[in-house]
Image (cartoon, rainbow, N blue to C red; front, top):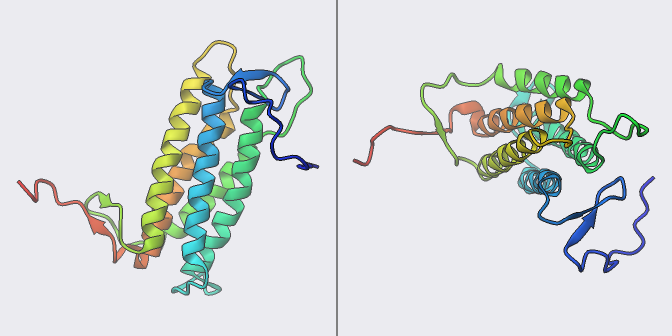
Amino acid sequence: MVVLNRIYTRTGDDGTTALGSGERRPKYDLRIAAYGTVDETNAAIGLVRLQLQGAIGGAIGGALGDGEAVDRMLGLIQNDLFDLGADLAVPQRPDKAERLRLLATQVSRLEQDIDRLNADLTPLNSFVLPGGTPAAAHLHMARTICRRAERIMVELAAQPDEPVNDAAIQYMNRLSDFLFVASRTLNDRGAGDVLWVPGQNR
């Protein structure tokens, strides 16, 4: 159970912050940057969900419209990203009791959602430019932030004594794919995508 009674504590005024383990690190520390950028990804997804409120699209699986289906998936992802941030905030140590860790089953669920959405998309013959509907454009923004978070996590994992859960890295890799596929879903299942035309303006 998380209890947040005081919002400011002044403990970070010296430029440090506490990991979930209690260890203090500089705010520019790579681990702090990793879970901070995961949080940024989550905030960007929140903006997508705001765009989707009340959206009605074509049916996926005959039950939900595209907007509702994507929103439901994004709601699960937002909770997963808090799990992932908590995972990163407590480095894995062999001599310490295990804390909350992202699981391979969460990665698998994301893959299933990608496959479900991708099955109904118009085939691509070019790269997609960020745009189309407002929600799709916001998904592209979330995707680029997600990729940055993944890069930081991989860099962190390459440092000595900075373990990163493999499932957490895999999740962020899949998430960027999900966000791309979801953006196409919300662009009329790909029919409304804005495609890159190589050399068009030369």
